[in-house]
Image (cartoon, rainbow, N blue to C red):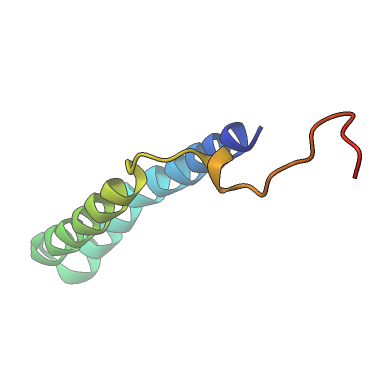
Length: 76
C-alpha cells in the first residue's frame, strides 16, 4: 500500500513539473530576449534532478522504513 501511494504521488508531481517546464522556459525567453538564461536554468534543473535521481535509486524498500505491525491474532 505504501509503495502504491508513493508511486501515485511521484507521478502527479512529475506531471506537474512537466506541464510547468515549457511554459516557464518560454516566459524566461520572453523576459530576457534570448536563450542564455533559460538554458542556464535548464542546466540547474538537470543537476537537481540528477541528485534527486541518485537518492531515489538507493537500494531500499518503503516497507522497511515503516514501524513493525503486530501479527494478526497475536496477543499483546
